[in-house]
Length: 192
Length: 372
Image 1: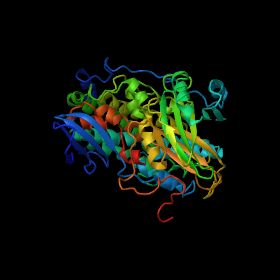
Image 2 (image 1 turned 90 degrees about the vertical axis):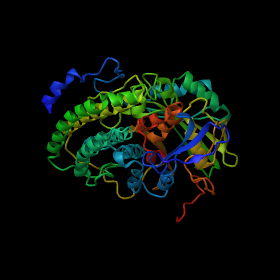
Image 3 (image 1 turned 45 degrees about the vertical axis):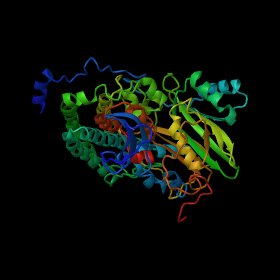
Image 4 (image 1 turned 120 degrees about the vertical axis):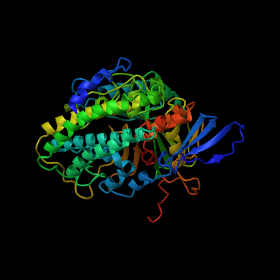
């Protein structure tokens, strides 16, 4: 096997060709940074957002997580600020929770950062609360293009309507689904 | 390709065709295509044929009962999906995982990464007509499944990484078989490179096809091999080090091209890095206990947590809301294939019909995982 490989390189180079540029990440060849539970960076981020938007409520600050709740009519401005000024450009996932006792839905956007070094481990959790009887919130597809399918999933699973979404259709459920949205707490799975 | 023709009232020359869902070439997944002659003008993914309601199911089961069903969406990377779950529950419970268990978790996750990438490259080769690829990959993949089976006891659905550690210790002397496999596999990967990646036919089919720019990859939320093939060296194992990954020396392969060739090649290079990690892990694994005694129904304090890991397909994340009861109040599963599904309509627009298989299968996409 090895003799065959020795003969081969004349035709097929084992090394990477010049056209394939290997981009080296920030901390690649050495060992990674140690896990340091340090909240200073996330506290700074929380202060910046809270200073700029007084209506934003900081729920918690952890070493790598910030959660803030904003009113639905402000969420687009805050989202644009988080994306453009703070540099959080990569939407990870959108979640929704049914707080049936509070008669509220929570929609939450988990946003990470790729292009800005030094904060790639931080996730900002941008949440909004909406009344359970008229669940209408603005869509953030214009801010993060990745939100499109995540919002469609939240729409069908919880029945939250995202206004301004380009294509708000069902995604995963069967076409003939004829019941309340399944992830609401008052929906009970058959047989339970 | 299974075809269902539909009349399109828009224009006579635009024809709407279904790709899937019955044909294995689409994998429990349907893409609705609008074609102008041989070219795709619009593509609309239609997932949900294998939707199981994992999130609703989780609300009826306690944190330990949730382990086996949560790995079902992606059985070819069963440790990748459970690693993130265990990490989230451990953070909620403030568990201090024993070091040996952390090493075993990393060993299993990296074995599963190789198993998953082998499958990915196999079907990628199969659907462009390079059938040697699937036969080689299915055979070689079994060596790693054997290693995993000797550790976990089960063959594919390992259910090995659980909250509080791992299910059991690995058998003594396993490193002998492991190092033999790694020695052989490292030479074997050179053959993959010669036979597949430097094959002029594959280069012709894949280079410059389905190019995803760096900006689009970030904007559309791509993760995993797709993101790293578009010039972003972003890997959660380095970006947000979890478990004992800071102890290991490995690099994050990343290429600027963003085409199908680069996406496949990233997976090959990642397998090399996984072997590197596995060698260090088997060499340096400390002795000690491998799991905490949590009992069959652990008490999880109220609170919420968002944890993410780098699984084989990309970034795997869990958002768990606990109200202090034995079952999760809400469990949100963020699976990488669902995130990468947004790339499909973007890349398929304007491609030739014959380029659909390399573009679609090059995305390291697993429909069952996307449906969760």
